[in-house]
Image (cartoon, rainbow, N blue to C red; front, side):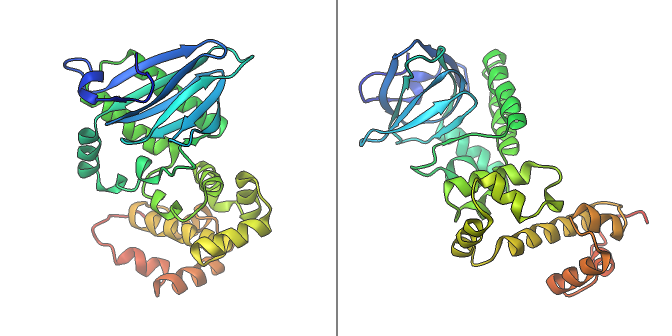
Amino acid sequence: MYYSDMKILRWEEVRKKGEAVNVAYAAQSEGGSWMQHGHDFYEVFRVDSGQGSHIMGEASRSQRLRTGQVGWIRPGDVHGFKAEAGSEPFALINVAFSGQDWHSLQQRYPEIEQSLFSQVKAESQVMEFDLDTSRTLGSLFRDMLMKPRTALHRDSFLLSLIQETGMDETSSQLEPFPPWLRQGVMRFLREESFPSQGVAHLAELAGCSPGHLTRTMQLALGQSPSQWLQTLRLDRACRLLEGSSYSVSEIAALSGFENLSHFHRCFRARTGTTPRRYRLSHPHRVFGE
């Protein structure tokens, strides 16, 4: 359906009349392939089963694929696929949409400007996720096979994809990181308990030693993992002070501070005021005590 030798696919040729998104399920038996191609639209794919290779660019660089991985493809990217020998049927779910529709969505939601495709690098077109996130993404993609191909369902899918992958307002902070660290940080931030977790856990999720993590983050951001994590904790505390009725002591705990006095010192150093005064300086909110 989609592929021929270096064919350039056009959105107006791919989409069906009256549909705002193209969704396809494609499978190949052992050794089968879809030849490299380019296109003038965006697409997101998820490996639904089996193993294979993602062939990228004119240099035909190859990246292994396995079930659960998600790939982000931009207009102008050249890529193809090949099923791995000995694998169960290699199957992909592909969601494609026009550049005009993607840019329109970004204009309506400026906070997603740095998400998804703006984060894609030549070396990181495919990502994998923790088990829970992978299951959620699998449901998102499979649901798209059954839903009407409307703009509403297209936009709902994309916005859900941004939220579930962690590529929301935090994604611009991840831009300086190498791909392996970017993925580790996103796994870390998706954990509900991340504010109380430490650098050792982040290093574990990133698949490196704490020392290597420190050197990499110092080079990328000019700060240590501990400093970066403290900034996230204090950002969380500010949001809770502005938008919740939790007490200051509860907010300290929810933001990963075990010691209330330490929280007060860190918060004052960051904002120049106390948590209580910070809360009172946002009168557009109504808080319980």
